[in-house]
Length: 252
Image 1 (cartoon, one colour):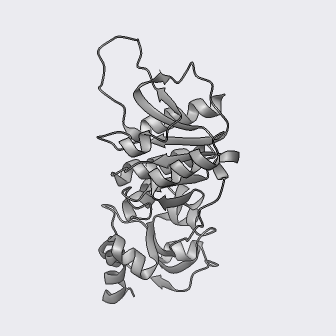
Image 2 (image 1 turned 90 degrees about the vertical axis):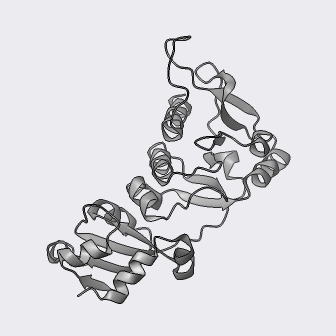
């Protein structure tokens, strides 16, 4: 039986403050929970009898069999699924010089949890293992972001930093490391030489890359529309732009 106290705890984790206090985040559904279990310490599994019978050797500090109604009361989804889990928040150290060796993403105040989750999923698909987020970027471990990442947050390390300061330090200490950004006034991405390592900066949904971050960018890129010169949408969704950009880097 899932107690009212447990439901209250789970629901409280919608708030970033509570996630930080409890050091926990929520994941729901067989796919997402299954992807996260090998990577994060699981504090609580709440699941239907059928799911538990299919997973008799689950590793969690506490396992509770719940009814459909109890899962509905605890869930953040419109259509609650057979399993919900609480995982420990990871505490990744900020790696030094990683962008000298690998391609990384930097996110400048991404606000929409769905966009962030999709970007994490894109990064996972293209083998990008580190994302550096500005302090103003939405939380990667909110229920909506975790669900949108479809488990990819297990394999991509999220680092929240003072982004202008972090990128400035990269420019100063490792001037050979390229920092790319997408801009309307940038050079056509399909014609530019692209590195296998460095940092790709993606900007806020409405305002793009902020001026302090823009000053750290060494290579300005532009994704052209097609056919050139025709009337089209004003801009691309940031998650779609990230996917196109990462694909072009990996294609090379």
